[in-house]
Image 1 (cartoon, helix red, strand yellow):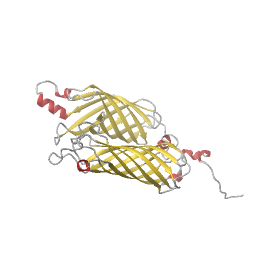
Image 2 (cartoon, rainbow, N blue to C red):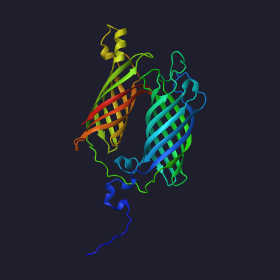
Image 3 (cartoon, rainbow, N blue to C red):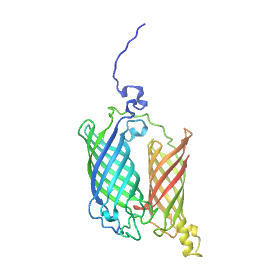
Image 4 (tube, one colour):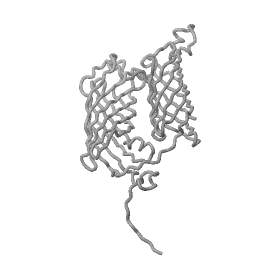
Length: 373
């Protein structure tokens, strides 16, 4: 009978433990950053009254965590960083456009990494408070935004260069869009482009090895997909009533692996505001329901992050009634899976919020619930 106590060092590639997330990674890799930026406003329409003279200044403070493989999508997207960013911005033409404060959730995907240099593509979305809005009495020049609370979307390209064990210098370019999706008019939106420089400091140690989790099996068969949604938007006049829109979508979905899904189907929308206007001006002209309805074919792609996903759709109108828009529309949404059952067929109930636009001009935000089976 004998016993021994030894020390050894192994690599995760050499063990069956690769099916589990790296236990040393939990709580590690938190990084705080600060960036100073300057830029301007992109005047995207001739209806934009305020002259965007001067420089747009912004400061960003962020808190992110480096992913290490605790979820299957971490490895699929090459271990991105995710977290939250606070954006403090002073717009060009401060007397009319004012300032803003925004808080967004964002994720940064690595495009390449070396020992010292990293290049990321960032995507974020959240809410912003704008100090200046349209005022029919005091400021009619600001015909850009009609509400203090707005949605904000940001795209970034970031280059990090390591200057010490825990500190990195960062250069970045960003495009930021502010809009209330016509919940209150006017709503032309503000598009800001900036470039800047900053620092990132790792608060905790970064593990040397990332460990991918064993890929989650996905149902690769076609699934049926049904959605219903509800939206409210200010219709026809500034300060007018907020009218509801209702939509129904029926289509098919197909998972491509465990981090991507294709969607296609038919979409129907009924706008109560358009029905009221049609019945008022044309009381005996015909069916108001049909003239306030739209049908479309919708095609889209969905990027999956566990229970969360980001969806992008393009719709082609087949019928628009009397109130015609462009021939197509776009949707950008964030979804969350509420419930899953049936491990083989992977049925699920999900919810989400989406922004509907026509070539960058927002029409409304809607709240959606759906079932995939």
